[in-house]
Length: 109
Image (cartoon, rainbow, N blue to C red; front, side):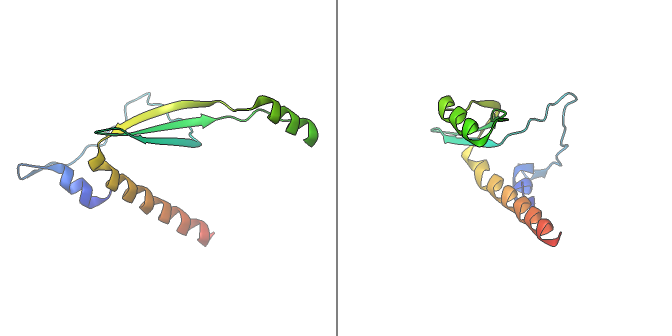
């Protein structure tokens, strides 16, 4: 999150607490190449999926036929996060900031 949002979250009754970001041992990192965002009455649900395409090793016409025959590709949910609406603007800002940094570094290469 951005610094302003962190400051707001850390203040409670005029007392500012620092955050000790802890990643538990054994926490799995998963790859996601698809995201589904839904909103409920009081929350946002963000589901992350890994979609794996089949190995297509034949000639192009066989591969096209195989894909048409399949009709769909399975997307496996690897993580589901539920957040309050109040966190959404900070999340969007943090993602945009990191995307801007990433894009800037890539254009320099």
